[in-house]
Image (cartoon, rainbow, N blue to C red; front, side):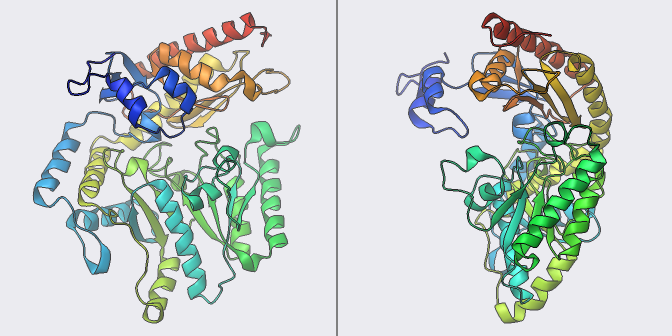
Length: 468
């Protein structure tokens, strides 16, 4: 336990249990076991309040791209606070860091992207994209074009609109979601969703046909936008099958449907390219940014729109008046200063190239370590984003039942080995800081291998699994 609070005479862990409601956390388990309190970090490692060191294999929540403990980030934020700590962007007001960050972001993006709208989280930015899509179609005289198509297993946030786009049942069942007008098509998960013998190309064509059929069934004149992550994150780290986005984009163009690329996780080097849009040659009308934008040193996100969308908003402005949407803290000077420093560090240290090279090493070592493991069905990923899927039967591709609780159990075992990771159902996910080294990766995978071996031994001992 940490030292008790001198005023209240309780530990920090007990204070947490008495005071905080934690996201994505079992209330019962938390009240029983309490929190792991992280107090400091450096590069790809963090330390908890008991002095235990961990390799942060998730980079926080897919977000600490430049690594923990960067003093120059602290200095940049402090320097900005000394000038002006806050000013908004409403009513034609502005602050210098927000202007400069918007300009810098556009320099990094595909040429057809035009304007940056700052928010505070990926959820807010995706909500904003939906409102802009609705606004865009209203201005075009097509007010019936309102429905949004997303994908099962896709993750786009937790606000009411963003959670409606998210294709994960646990985000819907307790909250009366999704809202009307939000539709979902199959996930491009070749391992689980492809037919026997179906190639990735054939699978991609079938999913494009499914999308086309849904649009025709709903009536294309009612569909506003399609949203997708270049690589699915919280759905299990699912890269697109060969040819997927080229087939999907043909369908969207055919039906005059906006394409929103959710780059919240994939953006700013995660895949070994600046954006997933670059890697998969996407042509989005809108791009959503967060996480790596500031490496999570200060909350910030952005909804970026193309020249095509901007032209409609600009042309409609004389008649509709102000763009009546915004957040008090959107474009916050301290966040913008953090964003500018993040990009400066990434460029100076060539972190995108580093992520490409070290990401290739991670992908190779993961496959060497786990591909032949009888508990592992598939190893998948791109760059510094990967998943190891645990299965009940490798040969027959049978998943573990939810009652086995593979995710929480393997999470605990890996924590005991000194690795913080995220279990997505039965998948061990990896998304370490882009500054991770090959030595860090070797140590991380040695620890993970020990944890997975303990998991296998426990399952065998309980009679819940039999190794081949």
